[in-house]
Length: 417
Image 1 (cartoon, helix red, strand yellow):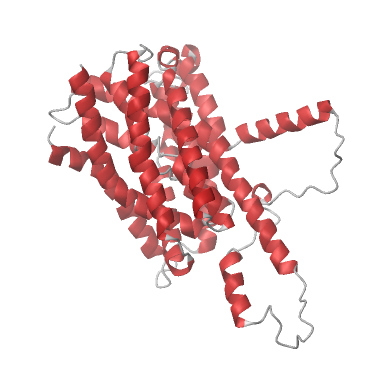
Image 2: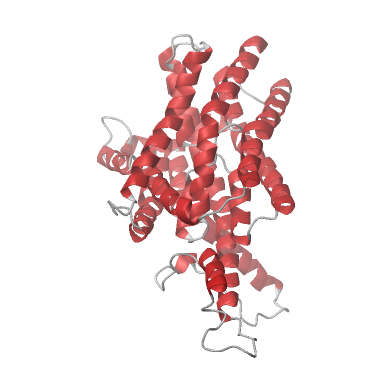
């Protein structure tokens, strides 16, 4: 596979994201006003509750088996390493750069959370169908590639909707607390008159930067900051344990996480799989319906991203050093870490003898930030304008980084074999 051919394969999914984002941006302009702020919030909730869980369940139940889960045991560890290394690097960067409080969690999330789902579902099968693909016969390669990518999507969903979800949630709670404190701060100017600090142009400009576009309503219980009032410091061990278990269960009850778990159960249990998968399955209409619902995930997320981008270009201000940091972490440092990890694991005999599996593991270190980060920032109404700008720059850089690193990874795998 030549460099130009590989460039076309790797850049196509990136171009699709950018084109759909452009359509979403146009729909969010004042001229069309189709994707307004309230519309994006409502659509985002549908994506969170219905579309994303359906996509994950449909992919897993159809392509993953119990034998696959056992033989691919290193993949969850590999994904955990990407989150761990990216999170540490993002945390170090946040301490050095010192971004605005509501952007700090977003910076760490962008560095640690890669698009390990739909990006792999597009890139890996496309590489398999290329005429000079080094991964063997096209149909077998594509089938295995879809299975690897679906398993990666499910596992990353567990990480994203537990770790990253809580990261953005805590950032939103901290942000709202600071906003409330700012708005409730008394005016201490003894010479204040009818024109107070709150009405002063300079103060108002600062408030415009800090206060989100719309505050959570009483219906948005999941995005309101939790307030601890007069908690007792001498809680018993049992009550603390109950609180910890409640927190873990709450994290696991996010709809995408539930979709991942149920999909793994159906994929790993033959008799359940036969109920919904296959032309002769008695309940195949359920799988078909869920698949149809899941197909709306990627377009809706991308349109919302484009709509937020217009808003972000008007209001958000991102330091160039933050953009450079995310690009360096995701497309320079993490791929080098990935080469070291996979070569070490292969040398220790921890990986199956399949170059395509190793290639998927390496690509997991190279993908741009996850699209679901945009979903979370919209849910918690924190830094979604900044998220759109950072995502745009990351995906522009990914068009070149994915091509270059895919070439390097294929060269490593083919030369080793």
